[in-house]
Image 1 (spheres, rainbow, N blue to C red):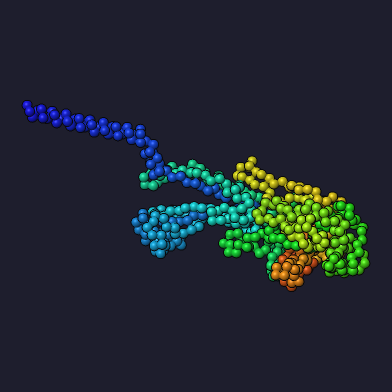
Image 2: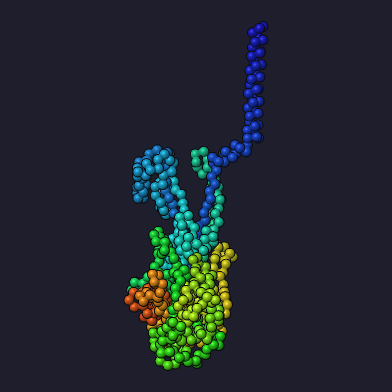
Amino acid sequence: MKNNNKTVSRRKAAAVAVLFIFFALFAKLIYVQVFMYGKINKAVERMIKRENVEIPKRGDILDAKGRVLATSVRRYNLFIDPKIIADLDEVKKKLAPYGIKIKQKTLQEFGDTSYVPIEFNLDEDMVRKIKSEKIFGVGFESKYIRQYPEGRLLAHILGITGADGSGLEGIEKICNSYLSGEKVKTTQYKDGRGRVIQDKLVDMSKIRGFDITLTIDKNIQFIAEQELRKVFSDYNAKKAVCIVQNPKNGEILAMVSLPDFDSGDKIKNLSALRNSAISDIFEPGSTFKIVTVAAALDNNKIKTSDNFYLENGRMKIGNHTVRDDHKITGYASLSKSMEQSSNIGMVKIAQKLGSVGFYDYIRKFGFYSLSGVDLPGEAKGLLLDEKNWNVMTLPTVSFGQGIGVTALQLINSFSAVANGGILMKPIIIKNIENTQPENISFFEPKEIRRVVSEKAADEVKSLLKNVVDKGTGRSAKVQGYSTGGKTGTAQKIDPATRTYSTKHYIASFCGIVPAMNPELAILVVIDEPKGDYYASSVAAPVFARIAERTAQYLNIPKDEPEAVKNDKIKKNDGKKR
């Protein structure tokens, strides 16, 4: 009987124990499922879920005709995980046919790690082939790299990007937020063995930055660079600049600064990044004389029929003497004064304007102001406040000394005269376009202000035409087209003596084609040419070659009577044949 009682007691105790364990497990399960659910779920998610920040493909930069100047391509870095590779020799054997070597030295450098980079910048075709080998322990990480199909062409305009892909110079910098686009978060789930069970749902091929279309025409840029590079080399110049502009709407068709660089290469000399066309300040010399003449004509201080006594080439002002290289005895007409680039003639014209009036016109033409062009690093130039002008300031500024300008400011002033007296904002971005056609921003031509009357502008254009037909600009003549322009041979300041150098000059020519109804304004600046330094023989011929080739490329109709006649004869001959 006692044994039976003991057995029953044991069974009851066992049952109680089982019930206790059951209820304990049940309570634990309830605790885990209800109270610990959030914490466990987060822990599981951390193990199987991976969030990535995807960087969109950077937008392209295009020329005015839609040709690609800068683009981004996906490249891959190959890495291995030594900790999960069972047979390293086998991995080496499979990678060898693709020219990829795993060096023991590399493995030693990285030590005890699951990530050892082996090869960089592989293209998609190569990655696809390696993946087909199904090599365990080999992985890839992708990135975008910037490419510039045209090499050095447009280097200063396009600029460069940094290691992180962001823009550091040029359009790459000024439009970085548009080109970069917005980063996208994606999610990936893996099972216990690390296999992907649910991939990202975002189609990254549709996520990208905005495309930027420039006003630059690649072919015109090539013409300008080719011709400028030749004179830059032939004269062993320090620097050279060329800008081609549509004077009617302010669009920049080409902008060249030498020396330059290749945007795709590693930049060793940071000074090469400086865009001289907008950042460098120089004394314009005689090219500035159009401002003096245009201001006086607009203000009715002079007429085109006026004559000026040119002091036989020497004019005394206080203790200083203003000289003319081309000595003209007696009186000379306004046209003759411009044709022979008379400094004395400009002084007498500026004196009629007075310092206040002259200063106001200089500012109206856009000097000592930022033009607002969409490029980084623009300088505003140098101009002494009119209140601080001394007895020699007005005379010297009248012929382009004692004032500092940028190449962009100078050509913009010629364009203002060319288009009838209206100063336009220089435009270099045509539009900003997303992948969606409706998302497009256009940069319309913008008038800044009227500088001079249309009548005064036409009179100046006629004077510029005479400079090329009869004066110092003869070598700038463009075959078949009426051509207007102005030479400028300016002495540079010697940094050591702070006086004008007799060895270092800037030779420049700025002109318009056709002369009376201009379609093109072109500026050529050669800094410190060795040997010959006169603008008439150094800069003007370069202008002529660039203008002729560009005019032909754009199919600008010839307007010289003989050229028009010959063209008609050729067309008629063609019809007969």
